[in-house]
Image (cartoon, rainbow, N blue to C red):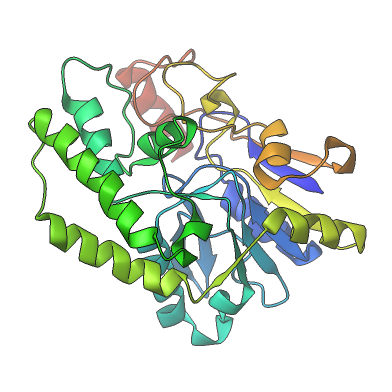
Length: 294
């Protein structure tokens, strides 16, 4: 299994690089992050930004995997698939997509926790995308969350309501403005019903079987190395393992099966959100650089 990661703070062009080499691989597998990614690819001269789906969706021979290390927002996933269907119905992305049953769900209340943590003066401002990614990972670690495979349980809706009602009480205590609870439930459960029609499997078994059969697998990383939860510029980092080692844990693949590791970077450095930025020009210098490039 080969691995592709960003070497800076994201926005290095990972999606474009993957699109360039995708034809070499049978499987493209996302191993971390959630809908806080933004891999931009041009398809038929039209820009498409993939936030949750792997970047192999435009290659009909490629199977796409959302691995265990990813946190999945059913509403976002349904919207992305709908966009691709409108763009080109012949892509049949839903038929070439596998989702890990062990991947955790981003619940609709998670984004409101993100908003509270970003806007409440009692908490450190990180500059997140406010998509609920960090709260989803936090509740995963607390063992207080739901996984994708749980959608098939007869208890799913009851468990979902129990968890989100508790979230509502906590958020209301923070003074957070929330939508009507039943509206939130209806939208989420509708997206869950859609996701249940997709292929939800033990993706670690599939990926390892594919490797044993000699198929070529590329593990696609989201965000970048300097945003790694352990090795990045903490606390101004993302909530998952973004480095090459994260592909092993996020997909359930032994390190002995790793082949090439691709690191993507760009000539100039940028970062989104708060945090240290070791190489930073004053605005006057930035403008001079822009004029020289133009």
